[in-house]
Picture 1 (cartoon, rainbow, N blue to C red):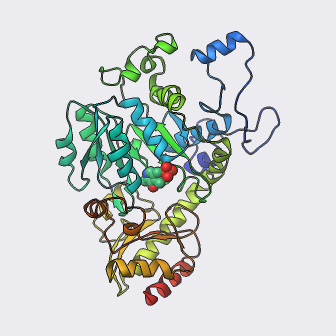
Picture 2: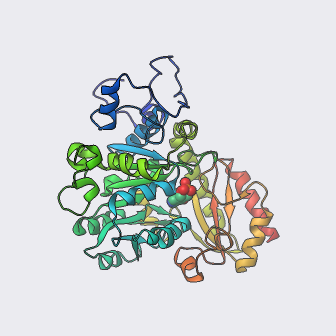
Length: 428
Ligand SMILES: *Cc1c(COP(=O)(O)O)cnc(C)c1O
């Protein structure tokens, strides 16, 4: 590669963060399946523990296998540093742990993954972290929710399960005025379709479990630091702006500059809360990430064809997919995800709950399960499964009413995908 040429996305997906193993020459990233790493001597150990030097200590805090994954996803997002954790939910926990104190508030869009709504409404409340809900269809609702206790704003780029695209730039402007970071869950879009840092996001989180791993075989999460937020401009983020007694009174936000947030998440959140990813899962997700651009294009192309087919079907009352011309999020989709609107779409089946259940019972190629982002085509009726712990009102607000069927369109031959839906709709 010539020095003056910045590598393209597909090149980064294959190479970023990885090089042949210096000891063995292994070309694929090895699985460093070890809990701990030997110190050169006591001074080396002391400098690692004191954050004076970077190096491996213990796999709860870092692993060379996960390090490749972290560098790769940070490169694909255009961020300064990444931190791999055990799951998407762990990423959300570790991010907010670095920002929030008991009694603080954060603002989240209502249009979120059902599990995130639960996590925010219940478990996070028990830490004294209070969520204020806003609506992406009314950006002023974010502005109205801002208070002196607000520490962050949280949105999804493409929202699960509604086929909804958030106006990231508009929410980023609210966050900037409030002086708080914008966190974007970029799981459904992946950096191939949407790059939130280019629109003003400060932190990106992922469930690697979905499209980045991409094969339905491993749970993982990622935090990416955008490197632009000034953590020491105010006293609002004491984890970053106050001296840390366990690290010789170091101020993380000063010492680590534009990757201080990722460091704080690692040396405070991951160290103390403990949700480390296994090196084996990182290995599988690294392998998945290499084909991300190929898969996301195919997922998006297949999903668009399926959406077009469904929109003409007499038993289908509506289709929500931002890639479909005329969809209410089409324009936002063209702005934020010009290469395609991803794999996930929802539609309404005539006959409501009973018809939805019949449809998921009659598919053959599709798998009926609670996941997205597999190579395989997946189907679910969120009302009776993923969103069933929410109230009827919350389910509707999250785009999971009783007639809603969600698809995660796989990378199989699109003719086979459509034929399967055709026979299942005929039977419904
Ligand atoms: C699945 C998912 C999560 C949670 O990720 P896990 O890896 O299951 O913990 C968070 N956000 C979105 C958008 C998701 O789809």
